[in-house]
Length: 313
Ligand code: RIB
Image 1 (cartoon, helix red, strand yellow):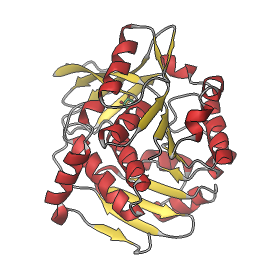
Image 2 (cartoon, protein in one colour; image 1 turned 45 degrees about the horizontal axis):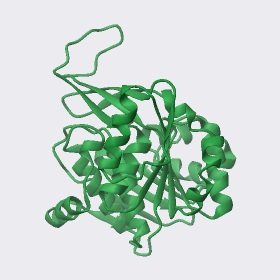
Image 3 (cartoon, protein in one colour; image 1 turned 90 degrees about the vertical axis):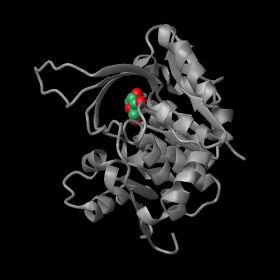
Image 4 (spheres, protein in one colour; image 1 turned 90 degrees about the horizontal axis):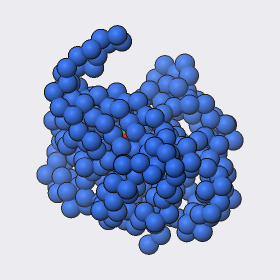
């Protein structure tokens, strides 16, 4: 079984829970503070490993108090961490505020994630070549992402890009993606001016990418292919505690399901379940579901989830 290789950020999440998100210039009191292992790259690698698929993370931590702890936690989830670089200076951090509805705001300070350069990845070519799929996000330098996508395209390795946080990307990069997985805010950024999901999809497909997953948080996800296939996975209804890393849980689980040969619509249902479980728990990596938990969830939530599908997809 080929591993899924994730190239991305590793952050320590500094999480304050508050009744509501403060306005600019306002000080409010928080109810609780916790440190959790996070970072979109690390979360996706942990999501893959928790479901039981071989997961290799390429990234960097600092030589500060968080670096060793972040690697240890990832290894504990089953992620292969031996390729992670340790660089002088601070590890990546994310200052997160979670409100009473489980919604969050996040500020990422990249720190060591900026050391995930093309030169670093050039030393990991064999790892990339052996990947069944590569998952990447935008919390590492954009030039690195562009080089990675080009390199995977040449080697015939499919790439799933989670465009978070949204920023301008070279069109040549977007054209080579197998999967592009924006949430609603990010889709609005890349499909500027689109009035609805159909319009957003046609603008995104004009870039040349193969598949788009439009993640619509508590509503669900629309999965579409360049050749016109569509399916929609409604989100499972759960009591939300913390939505942090729900998108990462979805991407990791979706990639594993595809690698196992499940159809796109079955993969979307599996991923929606993994994401729903993560929303019911606090923190990024601590919230990620195992295979057993995801299957158990699916077996009791059959009637609460509708999957509208194109039968061929
Ligand atoms: O997707 C959630 C993640 O975004 C958090 O863990 C935080 O570190 C930021 O990268």
